[in-house]
Image 1 (cartoon, rainbow, N blue to C red):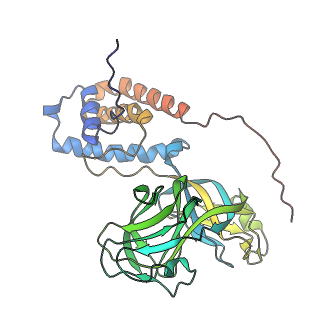
Image 2 (cartoon, rainbow, N blue to C red):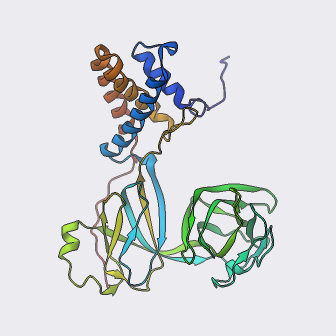
Image 3 (cartoon, one colour):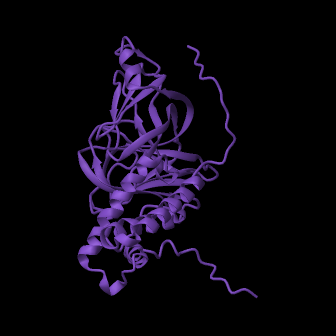
Length: 349
């Protein structure tokens, strides 16, 4: 009878220092001979390589769904600086999922953020609190999005959690520490749409929650926008005329900007889009790289070729060839295996 591990933790247990050690082994340089300067060089080159991967085409594992509020009369919207490309963009209408009971773990007006009035915040009196919204027994709405608006300009480290049974709370989304500007509703897309009996936001970084709006919602209607070029957008007349947006232009500056045309009217509430992002930085040896397991060999092979170029030039031709092969194999599998359909893009007004 076969003896199996029944574990799947090889990727999680393989940290950056192991990538570096293995890359140098392929160069013929063993652990005791790897100096601190060599390790620093490997970390720098690993970041350079991950940056280069964005230029080789769409890496599906870097795609994340994002959204922002549409403002009537505003055509341009600043995206995250680490956005490489936007693949699909839709304008949407959302349904706020009400009918539940609000609660606060640290005082304040718990129901205020769910009233729709930004002037009735829940101002807690202690750090690391949570604000929850629980639905009646038998009601389990499907949650897609959570919008959060702070009452003041504050930096929070928030996790969004959900419950099925009203007792145990599970992680739905961890939001890195960031600024929540006052009067600015920030939207977050849950990685998986969840039928829940309750949702809560919880501060984890020591701040005290002072929240004006919490919007728990799901989409009701969406309209896809067509990508256009800089030249096309420049040629369009009447850029300030307001109507339902039908197209977008991605201005790929250091900080990308999405420009909508026509300029939005009040018809739609949000833009939801798929964003291809840069791979996260490597800045410590005791980290996992921001890649899936199927790209581990591509990362190690690529790093070994880069290190050979510096420290083992005689091995560079072979390792560079193996590096290209490893990435090609990973990229060839990193696709959506679906039928291709070609349909006309027709909008009726």
